Image (tube, rainbow, N blue to C red; front, side, top):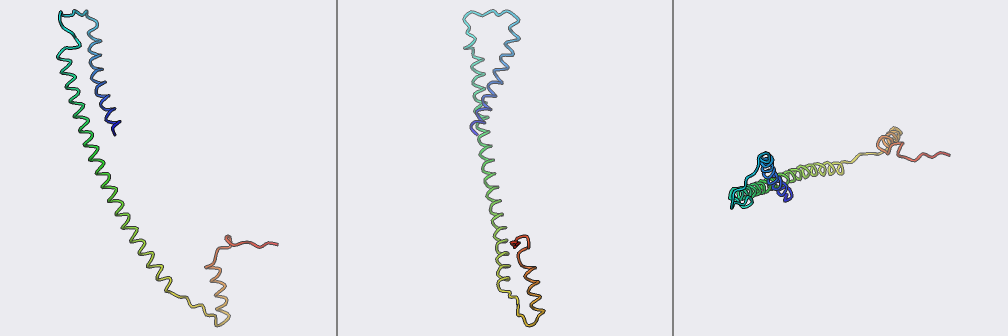
Length: 141
């Protein structure tokens, strides 16, 4: 985030100085006549401009920092809320699964073989409920 702020500050400064260079290029066509006793690098206008630019940069950096902090706090709240909802959903799903498992454990299937039909049913059940043929080993001689 600090890199972003630094990039914005550099962009603002370069934009302001770029405008000053463009103005200077337009003025190069006419001859310059220096006034006695004036130093262009120490003129009060330039100092005022620099001060204004520095103030704007500081205000911009402060506003960006506060917006970043607000967005960060909002994102953390959103993530925490989403995680809590997901945890509640998964706990309900786990309770349902445990309840189904308990009913399956308590339910018993009666497999008493009293006649030949029951034995046939046993073979059919073993084929239906057993592992598929593709999962079993094939014994070839």
